[in-house]
Length: 320
Image (tube, rainbow, N blue to C red; front, side):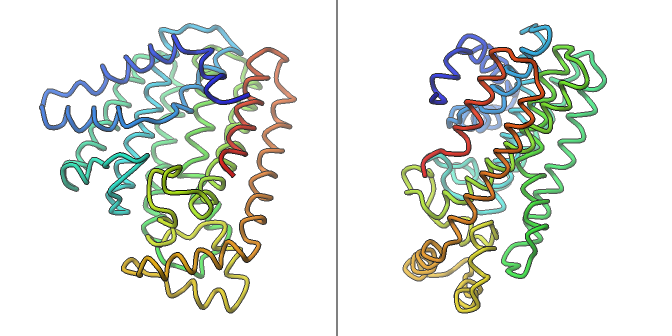
């Protein structure tokens, strides 16, 4: 099942979440308001809100509270994107100019901070202490992941464990929390919401590894940014970790720096694509997906479980 078809089941609920997002970023300052709206309207599949909605199907589906949890999580994700673009000096995202490209780094950073603060304010309307604990813990981990990404730039000797920890914090935990939070807000049994957390974590790991693969094999049109951007900005990902196992290729990879010529970068990307590193990375992503599917087997056999299975398959196989 295609993602568009799956998300169409929730069209009305996703529209309600979109309105909640617009209301949450209703800033009093015109410049901040414009920057927030630019980010909100830049697109995105709203995967995290969809996970919240699906997870909530395992409990009491109260849209009034569910939309607030879903919007709060999406705001955290949006804030992290703004901060990432500043760190990476990215001019485009999803084919549109970034906030820092439209204005400047200061506006971008304050926009991200404002959106993050609005997320915290929004979740206070959900009167379940566990939701606050889960969200605050996730924000801490996302921030640590951002710091680790800065610290590890161009560190070509970093371990696979370091990479896994970073993508866990940067991506997987937010998806895992989306799944768990939806179930918690809906009052689902603890065993169910913990299983959904593990499912989301495994899916999130696969999602990020797939993104890292796409950075090498997809076109700029698909990516919405230049191919090879991760490597150029010093972000060491799964394909690079596998490719560096070849000593000759490693000597080429360590030459990469932020001012590398485009032709030279394309040459190194092609070498990585020919090395077998992409295939090995796909295998790792697939193993995480298999773990996610096994977690689904522990959940009640309702339609939402089948939907989670479909969306997990979509995430693992997009655009190869």
